Image (cartoon, rainbow, N blue to C red; front, side, top):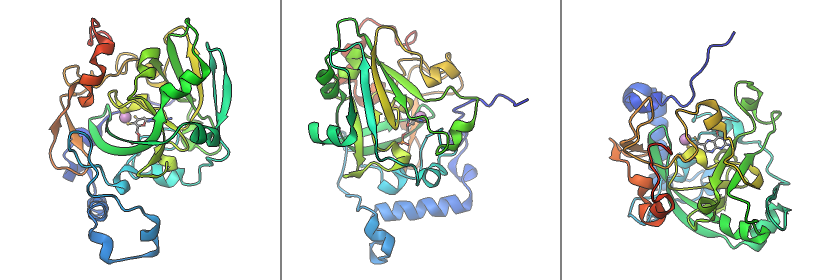
Length: 313
Ligand SMILES: Nc1nc2c(c(=O)[nH]1)N[C@H]1C(S)=C(S)[C@@H](COP(=O)(O)O)O[C@H]1N2
Ligand SMILES: [Mo]
């Protein structure tokens, strides 16, 4: 008999970093941050040519600096591989991302399957520098490359009866050790209301810092919804379905009272087990205030006019 393991306990978030991290981790993080600042540039090595130069000048629209590439790609939530964020990059390194196709179907006029190559050819890639706020209380600033989900949905022409969009991540237990655990409702799934899915901020990302998305960040294609907690942004998507009813999702199935369908970032609605008022920005000391809709209120607040954000958490 296994003991129920409550998911998403932010032990790293409620314990001061110097207590939580081992000395080795702190040294590793220091190296990673130094690399991001370009301090390692005087020590060229074969791997330094494979590592992209993180543009020191890249910032989001608020002026927040982009998190270094090495941090974004070595601190990941991806339960298919591991529940340990520092272990995901290594466990995902041989994940096969070619060939890959996405089936787009359900309530639409022209359902069809797209290969990744078709998507890249059809929808020009844009850079979007977005904040990512995890429900656990940490955040990053990530320079994604991708295209609006709306462009893809318009192509298949949703029917009038379509009110929600359902996203399914890949199911490949042979390659994804975490999927051998029967305690989770695999495959990972997520959902959006159709108007949220059509919002211009919602993208499908295929790249990071101008390079193909690494496996640990959801290669070859993942959703990014910047005003919602990170778990809404499903990785390694194989199916997008237009549906009439609000779909069940991975986290809302596991713990419905802790992870709602909407999951809009909101400093005033605490998680039942911790506050959401502040967050730890990776690479910064201390905490910063969390912003309503993760700082995108001007763009998205109208989607929720008249809705009680405590009821629809
Ligand atoms: N398929 C899948 N998608 C997922 C997850 C996951 O475990 N599996 N974790 C989510 C969570 S909790 C977060 S915070 C983000 C993290 O994205 P990143 O590792 O690229 O920063 O991915 C989300 N997408
Ligand atoms: Mo998360």
